[in-house]
Length: 130
Image (tube, rainbow, N blue to C red; front, side, top):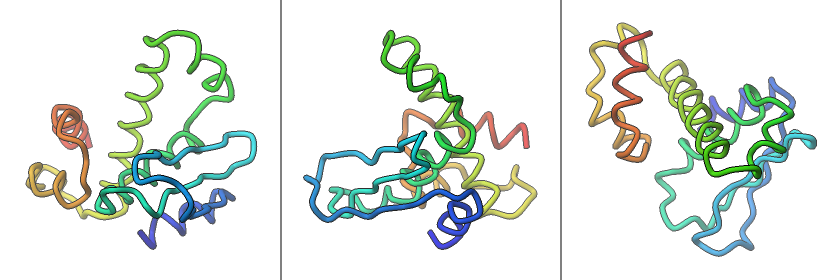
């Protein structure tokens, strides 16, 4: 988590941890404000690292037009979220693991960082392309 917070600081992104949200309210990134609101009451705290990497990815790699496109169609939202998940996985790989990446146990890696299981094929692909 410390490395992600340092990355946020380097990128001039403010992280706010709210204790006032319900356990099912996901975090959110505000592109124009360069700010992320994380839910410290989230029902699964093991997901904090992946969530923060995901929200950082929206702000670091996202396009200002994403906000407009995100709400246009489900296909646009899916495309933006899929790309953001890829960036989040790459951030975690670069910050938390040493090469060679092909030696990473994918199941253990995904469990350690609470990466959703539906992203397993993307994790495999990204590890093999690094």
